[in-house]
Image (tube, rainbow, N blue to C red; front, side, top):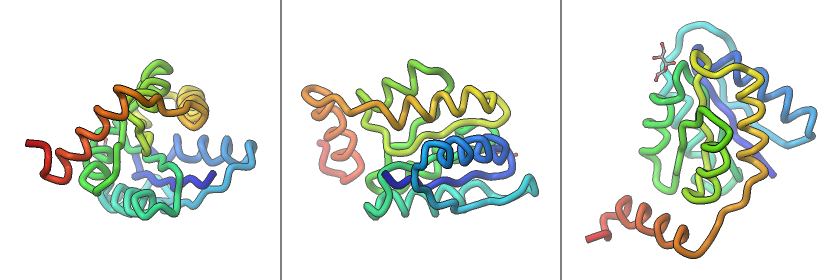
Length: 149
Ligand code: RB5
């Protein structure tokens, strides 16, 4: 499994905790920055990670900003990306099972480091459910492609 990770200054603390988790679990990752709590623009890192995941080179992405919201909005502009803001364990599981999310987004100003690691562990270890969920995800893709109507 290969993971692309990125953050802005507001999510830097969470990404540090997540990097430690990935290293402990021996999960391969590439860090697309940022690398400090110096103020930066979250769309830059959303774009890098989302492009890396949409290219197929990475299985999943993890993005953190202050709330998880801005960075998810930017990531979701890239074709093939389903970036989900997660703030609880149920959401971490269900966005994999039902939405087939491929990028996990969290906020350093709303989620603790321990919870972010817990949500990451759930997200990376939960499979996609097929059936009606495949159909719904295909609808999301059709909206993206402009073929939904
Ligand atoms: C940066 O101050 C903050 O706006 C950003 O981290 C994020 O929360 C945006 O959604």
